[in-house]
Image 1 (cartoon, rainbow, N blue to C red):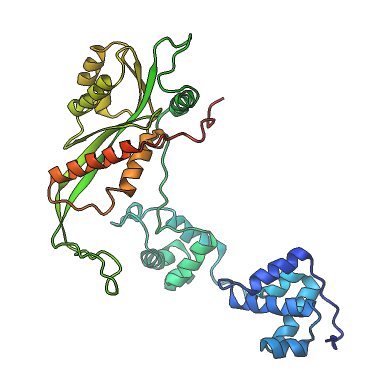
Image 2 (image 1 turned 180 degrees about the vertical axis):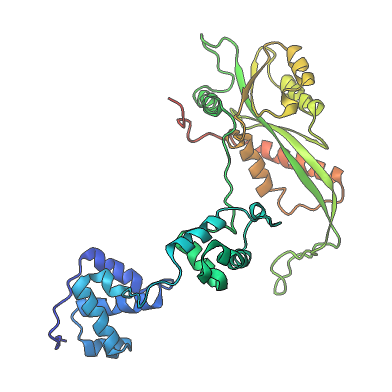
Length: 379
């Protein structure tokens, strides 16, 4: 249909057309922008104002405003409301800066008990101190006013974003050592021997998974019933029977898992795991152990045991707060997603037995974990 008005044609680039189509079909964008996108697409396609009004059900003045703004200042201008300020703002920039400065402190620094501000507590504190600070307009400021000021400055004093400070000054060096070990494992087969390495080396990644709860049922689980219940039914109540720790190591060449399930993780339990490794591998081999700096790994008792087996064990420490570098964590993740998930037991002993049974199942079909980014931080 030919356009009867004298307005110029609206020519859209392919990028603008794509953007407008996405906006017109959006379910999350502001409704006014969605409506204006539909208007501009129709007008650019040659549809008349009258036909647009009939098809979209919008008022003619609204259609005229959107089209005129787009023709005068561009497509983006046609989508947005025209900013206007009928009078000078009553809250000055200095007053807003004062509110933001308070929000950037902690309530305890202002003599209050709380650790973080809530919006209502901040608004109350602002209104009570506004007169003395010389910002009388803020004496009646409510939560919405304070929220707008904070939002303008992208400040959210009621939320916490956690971060981890790098506390290990040798983090990069230790990380490179661990990654070089993984690269060596990927190059050489299990127990490989050559001129530069006369004794076979077996690499084992070791760590513990503490605090595994032995949770018991207060009523029997209800099995699924066709036509009635599609899932297992379980009582909300449960019984805590204690916790155990898994001390485990995984052979990075074969995927074989060594694991002891213990009530505690002390030097004596860790030494027991080292003895299992010592018994498993050939006597002439070097056992290279990738592990963290847990006190049990470097205690006096552990060092005494290592000294009794000179040249047998070789430690490669992960950096502090670098447990993600230890490949045995993949094994623990697999345990959590498989046999430990939703587990319910009648006793601590049953939990230990089922964990060991699950590890036996893993060893029946071992999986060799590989570090996929061995070049990270390594020249």
